[in-house]
Image (cartoon, rainbow, N blue to C red):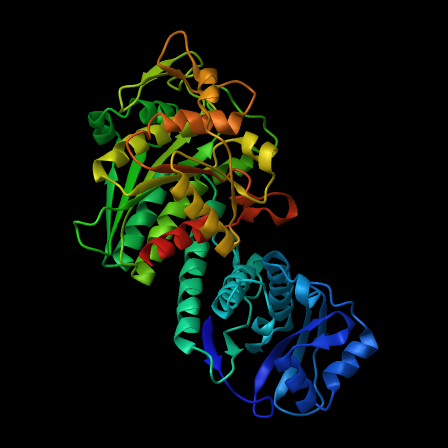
Length: 497
């Protein structure tokens, strides 16, 4: 998709499709009013005739205009002027994007950004438009025959109509950031949607290497099982024992600053399929466990965003990748393994494997002397029970780091909600036979998982993002969402500024 900025007057504009916003009682913004006047009051007449309520997401499509250079018109409800929140604005944009895609237009012009969203500047509104449109245009085609793929959307170009006095540089920066994040989300969605028989740990490693070849400032290294054993990653390796697919530790280094500048480290769970091991999951919905690598996919994609934007930072991505399957060699409940940190772990449930691979990756992260470490993982169903599927769960040992992530989440609408990591919860992880148990019982499962990881993150600022409820959608809309690529990318953008 090509995005551009234009300052044409309504009388001169030529476009396949024009997107205008309206509020209840047929109230129009300044730009929409100007177009209404240029069209001889057509917009007002159409709204009066069809009388849409103007709620956020209401759509009125006019496929033919009687004369002039504007071929189609999409009128988009924005709700009451003084009640337009970021969520409602995004809802309107999503409805507009789907309507635009359905028209078959090759080129479109939008003035929806003229709507006022409290405390959110023009560049934010345009960024949201780009990211939401790119998400609407996303298609998964890798494992579909050409006949089943359907026709791709025709839309090739979107231009934003701005006032001549607008600070174009700021808007162009917003578009650049949005495009990079959208590219990252597409990569993460493609990886997440692939089945486990294609997207294996080795395949995930190959995609990281492919990304590294596309960007000069990315350096990719893959550690195999022999190297992981030399490092003493007994916890990580115990998970892969039940699989024929060897484990990989994917290391991606982005160097955008001096070698003396400490890096930010992102760690992503890369379980390419999780059957639960000996503690096998129920059959219903187990196909969705191909999404257990979405944290790893997001980290790989976010390193790509950093490289595309050439952020003046150093960033390290660590993705421990494995499968978790039942086998004669697989972990058994009651087994005790030794982590890279030397901590012994009693495995009471082999389906609590994400923390077993992440803890060794967190220990490995220490060697980079990081500014901060952020891990992201589809870690616990308990997080979905606690928070639903709107925010991701957030825990951490540093308030400033957590606040930075909360702020980045609000900016991108890839939001998080912080949960406590009180010492009280650590009591649930006590073991009679090892230093720590890998589960803490049925109460507070998302929190005790965070508490487990916190034991391996005492030497640096650390935050944990549980994306079990946000990494993919289920039901008729089943598919990867690309989260938390926007959140992690915005965090890095903020750090760069």
